[in-house]
Image (cartoon, rainbow, N blue to C red; front, side, top):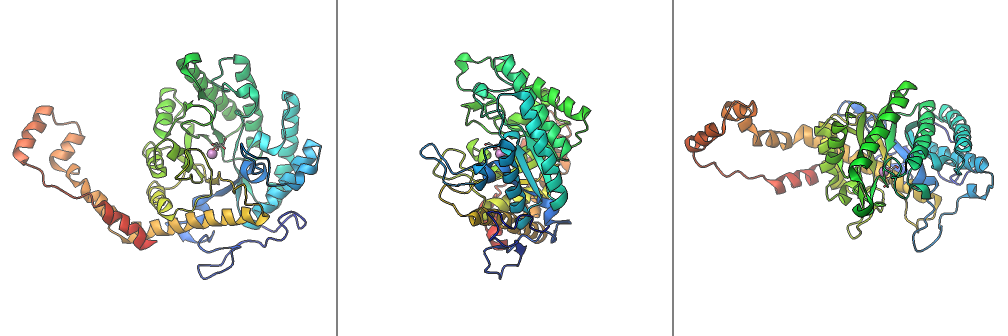
Length: 441
Ligand code: XUL
Ligand code: CO
């Protein structure tokens, strides 16, 4: 990949390369070496790192207390397609310099939408043609596409779960166009994140009808995609709330139950976002393990929250302990099914240099890479796996195995309690396990 935009806002930034741990160059990777093989796959194959169009090229640093601090040169264009093309030039230039192989977008990130459905379709199609060319020139690919069904005021009560069918139809029109775009661009996946698919108050909500409609909407979209050549993976991205008070796709186990109930498990996997996990009162690892156990560990939205805040701060990931524990599950599960690691993260309001976007992604990619290397060493060299297996050895033979196979009655268990005597107390050795992580970091 060679830089495509020598005169862009990123023109002062060199191409980022792997230089190893001895490097002092802040514009280099110290751990992420795309071609290095870890546990049988290259790092590039394991991660499929992606850039989130919305945070990096639309998020302008504004917050509820103040306007934009990130001033984008493409905003000087008044024509929406000129603006969209200039923004896309910058996006592909950024990804090329960084060596990032994938990107993700919402429809409205790529080009501004109005209230005219047919015109929005034309705008998106024009940008798809432009993006297709850029993909060919740079080798960068689409990890997943999605439709923004939460920002327009018509979606204030949800899209697929809106009490008004007319709003649902508008949501469907947007999904159709975004799916067409994803198919045309060879996207590996398509994401549904239902930020407003929930409620603000149960006083005005028919929860069972809303959930049924959500399931019917997903079936309808899935059938359209499959009929029109989409062979990739559909993903649901759970989050417990924000912007709604309660979101139906609360967490992984809630979504697995929903997919099973409505017969969607065959086509849908889960996109797990770190900060959404913590908002649901879980750890990132809890969500990864729950998805892996259900066979739906599909993709990751990488970021982190803030210990002092209770909202979705979408900071770049840098917690090595948390990521190493995550990579243990990732490796033992055999990686992600159909997805990749998308940085759903934004630089801070006061990070105003073009270089800051590079530092943020470099830090995140290096943190994941270092965690992967560490987790692999733990699995290969430490007693971590053996200790966990030994802890459950009593279920691998004898009466424990009979129990698992449904061969024992409650009376049998009672008799075994007497014949076996008082069980020996066995340590779970949590601190010893935690020390293993620090030892191999
Ligand atoms: C919001 C969020 C979304 C989804 C895509 O919290 O994570 O950006 O990833 O709609
Ligand atoms: Co996300």
